[in-house]
Image (cartoon, rainbow, N blue to C red; front, side, top):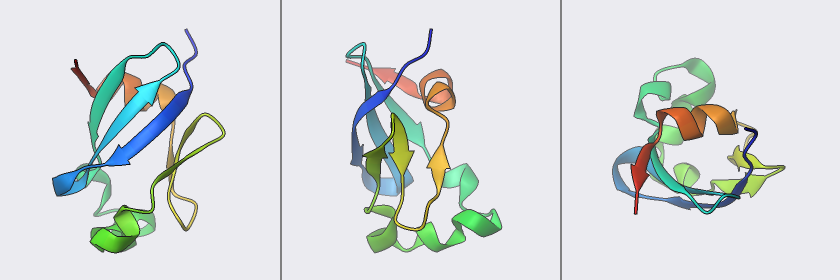
Length: 79
């Protein structure tokens, strides 16, 4: 099943709340990515909060993005 992200909200402690087009919500922890070179700038909370929906997934100001299937599979289901 291919899912698209329809909404994203930055949360505290480098988590994001992701809503998919099937109306399920998942909380995804971005912290494990922050030590990789491409992601390090997102340790700056102001930049982290620039997350937005882009073409069915999430993207940050400088082009960092995450596969929607990974967001779904690895995200923690919430009500």
